[in-house]
Image (tube, rainbow, N blue to C red; front, top):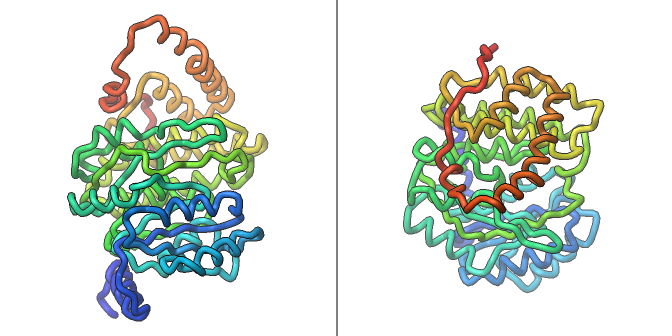
Length: 383
């Protein structure tokens, strides 16, 4: 094996596993990590098994569930040959469960679906048809946010709709602003094997997977159609207060490092990704009570260090003056002013702006989204 890189090893491992299993290669492997979701699992499985595109395997990874999730999986598998259950000996977390599923997957394409979400009828055929038509390594799709009493559009609809039919992240860097999750992508297995990308442990594990994946893909296509129903659960782990929310900072550090390994034009991609990183980290600090109060100043200190470490050498995209102010306050590390600025923006968004919009004629907001101004709002030297 001397002289063979990690990506080539993974490709050989995939081929050997398919041969050893003695199974015909399915077009798609749908990987579903499962942990204590008995209330939602049946709906998730039904939405997958009822798809009109049938050339797929469903790799369900039971991550040591404490409820009846395992029994539900076994009941479905008893009557459905496309389901393969992977039982983990100990809890591995979401990222580890996905990796275990990937190790058992044989499909030409991979789709990660969370076990409390569902997919719409025809979703799988739409993704596979688009992959075949374009020969893209990565297919991005839209989604909705499903609350208990309402359904809202996903945040990436306009960016997906404006995307070229086939592109790379250097051609269309606005795709970096799409929600960084695993389930809004159909991924060619060869891309995963070539890049060697896998999920890491900790919270926000999607961040150092999504952005390097986008950077590594040689061809990307997008479907604005809402194909995934993203369930919004009040008790979701990453929406609760915990010191583990601090993981997002180290995950972003990993993401920026891996992006540099995956793409030749590192400076350009990192410059585009820089404001995405700052806005994501700022939301976690300011938009809820996720960061315990005793850790907030430490979070700001680490965020400021992240800012200085990755401050780009070229202008980066800005969505407006308020974002520039936010970035300036992050650079200075002033927590009270950050909190005051965020509250002021919340009042503006919730109370003042809707009133003004009701008085003004409609405006073309999509153009403002897809054609942002570019600026460097602060003059901070990199360390």
